[in-house]
Image 1 (cartoon, rainbow, N blue to C red):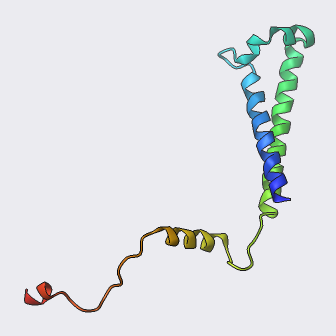
Image 2 (tube, helix red, strand yellow; image 1 turned 180 degrees about the horizontal axis):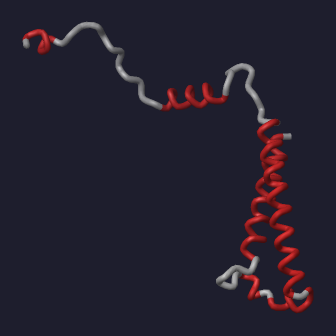
Length: 110
């Protein structure tokens, strides 16, 4: 279930990015390259459609992110994901020599 939601989040994110890039901005945007679409639907209708699509995709993305946080798999064996990450980091770090209570000979002479 979690994997499906993550895949849907990726698809919605890509679609949202494409919709935002197509919108007409102060600099003209990519919508100026699609002149045929404006002639077919009309400039105002195209702008309304792109704005509604942006808000819809943004809302879907927020809902999917909330659902993914609820369905996040939990490891009952390891406890929290933080402990799992910290154990992986500790495994990657080189082991330091154990600290001893003995003072070095040079420190005793001073």
